[in-house]
Image (cartoon, helix red, strand yellow):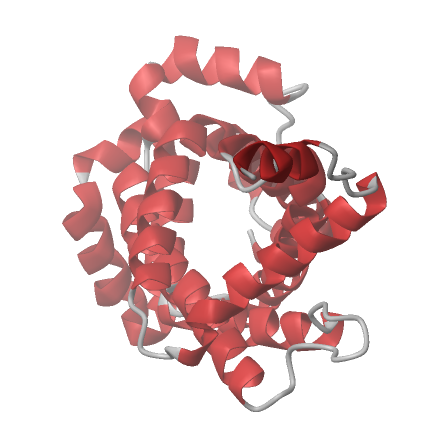
Length: 268
């Protein structure tokens, strides 16, 4: 009898490929929706903050060259009216040669402090709002089983606006120290903070909060929903592994960078 049972098992027909894909997508949605009931989950806040801080350390020299390129050639402030850099590579080399490699990381600590607040609040708020939307039946489209795009965008935009407004003083410090480069090290983080507060008051720390919040809304509205969408679509190819998260993050970050660059120039 055991032999018969074994033979029956061996001749079981494999499922068609499209059915396997549907089952995998269904399992993935269920896996993502299980923790949706727990709105007090602290992990998105911690993981989002740690990921943002790590990324900031790795990409900050590029951010410094971007800021220098954006402020040059302006007519409002004659200090930066000259076109000193021809591109990102030229800016990177000239800053390193003229001011030292340390200048590429000028403003890193305000940036880290910003990500510790902005990144933590943005990611944590986004996924917490998604959980509330799920619990109220607003997130999932019951016909397709997928998440509604407008719900994701609304959650992301709210998270971006709130987090950027709270973290605006650290953003002001970061940009000021990046612009002044080597000279900014004479003051340091606390000295730069006190200098802005002394001469510009509390309003100086929230200078540009409007464009900053608009930029954050655009970035979050593109980055977070696109990441979730790409991750879901790539599940059949990569599964829930590092490659999926890396590719999804790359696509989402590229889209948000393109969408936010005009606002970023105005903000600086």
